Length: 153
Image 1 (spheres, rainbow, N blue to C red):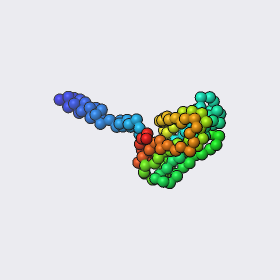
Image 2: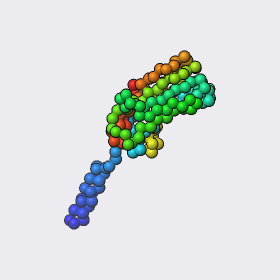
Image 3: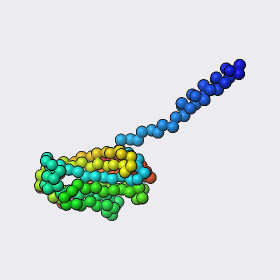
Image 4: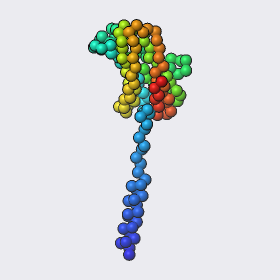
């Protein structure tokens, strides 16, 4: 009798352990988690090398909170990058891409990276030859603690 009772208790514990697993639900495709913030990198191509891309197109990248510039990347001869630090307030932030000067049709990609998790999300857009001084609201990032919800605009 005692063996049957002990076996029943062991089976009950095993079932309870299996049912109370601590597996986390996967995050939606537009959400990432990062304890160190996120970085947004902007790269583009004009159909040739990366040197050709920066020669024939000058794009700029802005991270905004309302009307305030939080971070700006406006290098003349390189790709661009801005960071949304984990130290920033929980709020909605806007990522803007500017075609400062575009001499050839230009395809661009924004890479949103969690600073320490290695996850990368990518978003693409285009500017046409002759575009200049055109600023596009491209992404909205809602920061809530270590969770970043990204919406393409």
